[in-house]
Figure 1 (cartoon, rainbow, N blue to C red):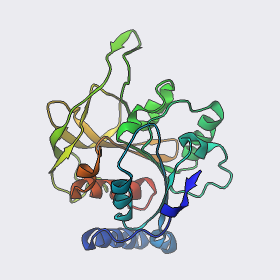
Figure 2 (spheres, rainbow, N blue to C red):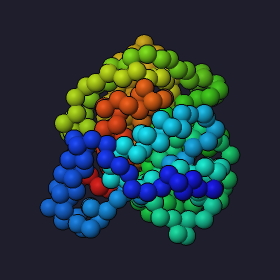
Figure 3 (cartoon, one colour):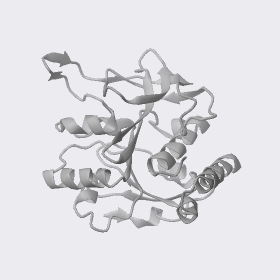
Length: 258
């Protein structure tokens, strides 16, 4: 089931971000990217379920990110992969907290990644698919909901904290973080996660109960993947630094940043 009332032309978030999106499209067109594609809205499907959230604040966040056509998939999250014959989205944003993905859904999900559909794994979605080891490889990291074992090594349950987190831009040359400055955010940091070797870490967090990696990128198949730990509630969603990272992360996974 799709909540189609939330699908449509997003309203402008700010003059600054609108200018950023315009410049990104202009640069790509100059680099030879198809101009019509660069100017088109990015079609995004957002998976939810398995974790409560502030729906009004959530809608305000997405209405504030310019350049997107978005819809929230309100049914069982992984049913979005039941039939991909007419899959219309440029990017998938996982904000669900769910296991139980079927073998057929896994196959179709991997097919989309092999076709280059972008993926954002956001906040508690890092705890998705606890019983599917490949999901950690796709997402670049994993929040452990229960203690586990890997290669004979015991892994404790991951944890959370809360408070002001100082965000440090580790890679100022990547298109997502280029030109960004360090910022502070009130959020729910995670700790005790595991991370895939080889991910490119863009932003780290400074908090006693936070793992260092906050935002990272990698590729899986032909897909660009953006892992983003931050973003518990509207206090974080209203932060300018958070919004810039989310907007640029989606642009990057959708192939709209040079």
